[in-house]
Length: 53
Image (spheres, helix red, strand yellow):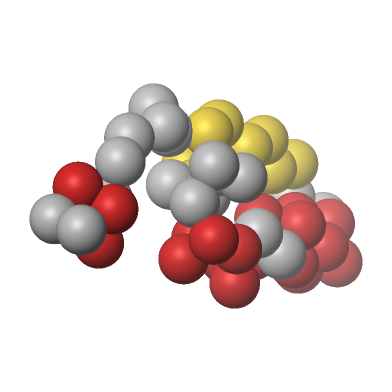
């Protein structure tokens, strides 16, 4: 089985930093279940906290 993991994490915004470990953790869980997981990063965009000051 193959699954895709899409993440909005990017290293441009500090507010996204807590989510940086999530794809790796999900890949580990998938590997333990003998599932192939691939990660695709979302399009980096400015979040509301940055754009609204």
